[in-house]
Length: 204
Image (tube, rainbow, N blue to C red; front, side, top):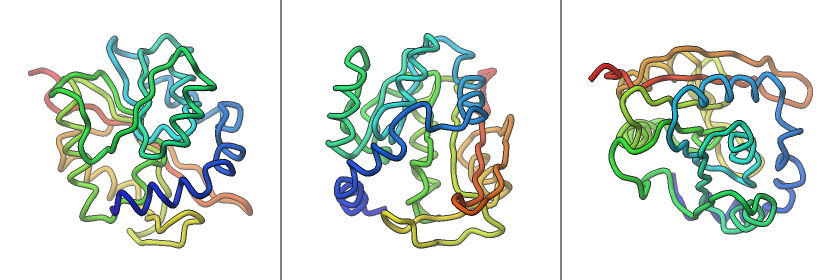
């Protein structure tokens, strides 16, 4: 992933993205339930990586989670801080998190992995695995598809993943899937999927 290209692409449509997606009420109830179900199980910090306008970081904080938002785009971080002044938000990249090894209880990657080319996903998942404590949970949302393939996303190139292939990449990085759900497409929405996985050596 060209970090600068993705950052600049989202910065150019930041206001529109905030208007379209930047509120908890615009997230499907089933998705909020999935996120809450898996990221409230353990005490400790949860990173919302690619937090965008910060609405899901705020949602998790409302559930009593010590959630911290991280995003590449200064406009998103500024909006998140203005809208959720009690929250913590930082500029940063998922490719190199400024977090100690095994320091966090969970990670939310809500459609923030979609611009990673398939060879790049493994490295980011390994970085997530590095900062997650034993038994920590990763929740990811992504575009569902019959095969791994790029498509012309409105902001910049994104990728579809079959759930099975995504789960295999998680296993390769040291995670074990615990649940997934698929959302069918319609006239306004592509097929989507959500997946939760835990660090595989939770007993160590």
